Image (cartoon, rainbow, N blue to C red; front, side):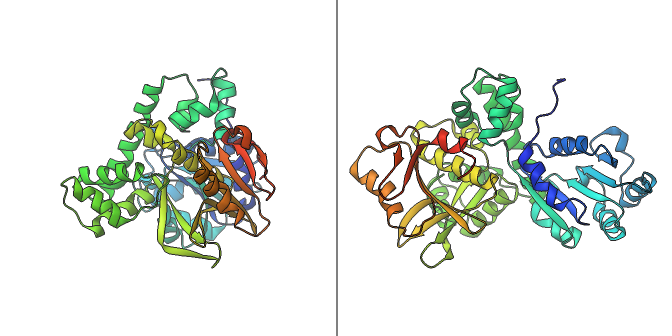
Length: 401
């Protein structure tokens, strides 16, 4: 395709504060979320620098198979009197690559940008490899707003929100008008590579069926509190044999491979994290739909998931809230400010109204409070207690909350 790359401006902005700071900048995230493309776009911005670009999956770099050859190649490209930048994609394919990168960091000769596959290098391991001398930029698949940008170029006739909720935000799904079935097959293929290479091969897991059963169980509980004990009980009820410790271990692998994201519970009154309660959200809704099918009855959980990842994308720390035993679906914290959000598909009873609006009304601080619905109807607007009720589309399209 000859079209220019679609810029992911928020991530480029996130890189800016770290430029030239002496650390390696590391782009992490689930497979196929756009890490390599982001570095390509960033490379295009470096018009006045000497850029040394290495992609270890290209044949021309196949000779760089150990760290000594890597550092020799990089040093041969160094130029005096200009800014020197190293961009290395899929760095993990080079044996002992970290020795070369640590050497370059110590020499302060290059501004360094890296990506690496989860198969051999999990996000948590960069600190060990680089001695803490790195800054992490965490990428997600496309946000709703980014999907709108892609759709404007490639799919101008599509209802972006409906498509986003049904297929998710992997960039490959937004550059052509693939039917939904083909989109879900594409996401299943991505998921299978992650499960098989990033987890099973990496951690030498033999019980492949158990890993998949645990993942499917988590996917079916989006928006609900979940624990290793509950998942163990569910798995055990199907006749499978395992232990709570094994379930907990496998969940950790799913998190490390960026398939799921843990949402801890924030006690609003005690201002602390509750260690014994949490939810899991999927990194991209397409992952759930590709394995379980699109389930309209789960729409409230889908909304929560979209809001959760949207706010992570916007740079918030995102939690489930607990206020005197009452649940707040989402508490988002950034720069000393907060957002409180309740998500529901519709309000069809007094009990639902009391839960969604009433729980928020009990919080006495002045931070913004939202009830987000698919279509608010008569509830749209601001209540006497200052609670804002809006549609999911309106919330996602409003940048400044």
